[in-house]
Length: 455
Ligand SMILES: [Fe+2]
Image 1: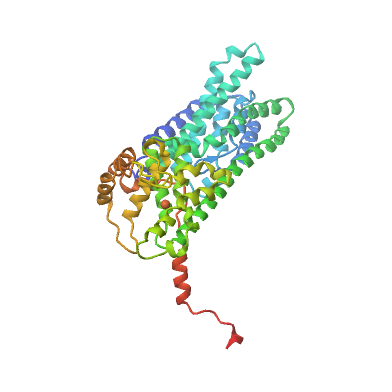
Image 2: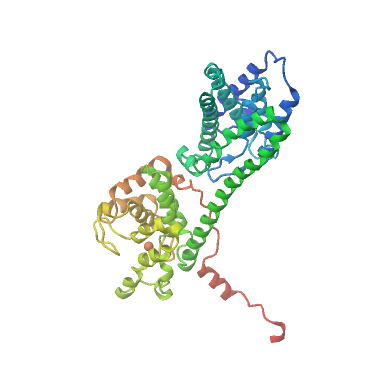
């Protein structure tokens, strides 16, 4: 095997090599024989405009980079003075280079794959124009609009599907998740670039290329909306993560517990076939399930011994406190039932309402399993972790009583097929911090910095 070939991850090879080869064939096909009537200045102009657009990518949460390059590439496609498909394929190949490509951020095969993606989608869109040419020869507006929609649609579908596939393989994440995290949220922004691309080509032909510069304004607005989505999401997850850390920090025994429960619950939800939006809700509720512990007194929460009956009663109020903490925040309101019922047992013997079976929200039934599994498989101050097999034995023993058997089965098949690595796929940042209990201990040991005048 050649060394350069070996550097490409095995999971990506079946996608990357055929795509790059297809794009190379297309570039040769459109360039031989060399088209005689090429307007090189026009070609350079569209390439330059595309390069400017490509210089402003936005990294979306699923790993996909959203750019505003679609509009200028489609403008090159619709420009009748560009000797297409030669023109658009080369604009797509050269113009879409991003600064991060020069920095070597995607590996060379990633850079080549992305260029190939643009070339193939451009060529596919050009084929649509070719096939529909006779239908619009009369110049009727509806036929032309349909042609633009068809060409732009094929372009966007090919372009994004290849990108999603590559990210899904690279990150070992289901394609539905990459879609839900990235493209689904900016699909309007991508579609709006199709008519914009056609308009840019028309304006360049009828008014002059300089007028195209004006289109950078709506394009930059589209980019602004992409980056706003990412920022808002980061802000939201950052706040939820901070809240979750506040609980972990207070409950000194369980550093990172909520974070792990969230990952395990998310993986189970995905294994059970929930939609990505639902999976995200379960993950968020996993992070915040014990937020109500903020309302439990420290002497109970941090008691190193068993709780007596009165204390247990007070401790059991934490799901109610949690629900009331989350309720006022609109973005967190969908989590309220999941947090409220995360201690309901399947047979109705749980708390706070004694719900049973399917009347317990599915998210809560997942979280209680994830919570128990995590507690059994991680070390605590008062006992050691018991290991995955024994933890599964316990879950199986108490299924139908405490746990929903379907949820336990999903966790079992997840662990059998993928091992603990199944819990790693999450967008949530890894938590590294000192718990409040550790901080108290450290501050108690460190000599205090004294004021020089205090002697
Ligand atoms: Fe809890």
